Image 1 (tube, helix red, strand yellow):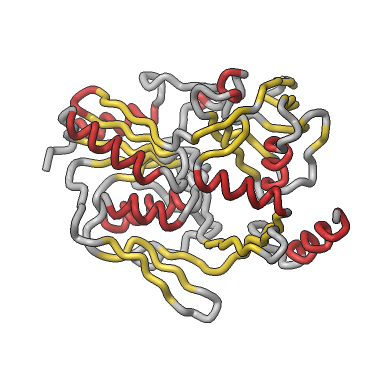
Image 2 (cartoon, rainbow, N blue to C red):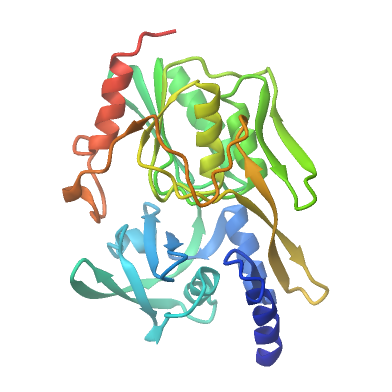
Length: 332
């Protein structure tokens, strides 16, 4: 069985596409759990540098084993339960963490110049993909951590609650959002955009599929969208559409630049393959793959804030600049 799985993995590796992956049956089941927003794990979002293979922590969900163990964004993972992860793909690293037979997880980390080992107990995680609150001057704050199947309903509920509290302006925070489900981000974008295309995809034959926004919803209040170098894939679809329609201001640093679409195909034995099937383009036709989206207002995160496990909103220079811009933007 191990030889078989390595053969399939090797075939996909021959495509020279880092986003193509073979899933064993257990790995595919875990991937489905992750996409649905409910899974067994530690509650952390991981990123992998495609050039170096380095796996880093992008975010930790509140009230989860990762947060309770003080795992921090920017931490570099080097080993899991004593097993070095060098050479593993991101999906393999996630599978190592979520392996059901291991209830206790030990992570070896590099944080700055310090080497750490953290231990945490896995448990069932319902992904809190949305966090929100009302800031000063009736400014709503909506952080979208990723776009899972459960995200759309969470965002609708958050927007309704903010409207009930008298929201006059809104900040959507997509920093460190690694992406998610294409249909979900299109449903979310439809809550904000005027009638027209949200995104369109083209396959290798040039066949085009457009995902439209209807005229039922259009966000007409002052809007700022926060992005950074870890805003990828589905979060770039949302950011690109906001920028193209000029319904809000993008603020932060250039996004990751993942402008391709994958689909998971289940095989007859319950395993599966994830293959790249198309490229996507913003409504105005921009190809952002390996380029990213340049924000309208470029504001790097302050150097002293990088790597902190949590940043107070009063200290967050990117967020504070967004608040300042909205304060000076007339209400519509």
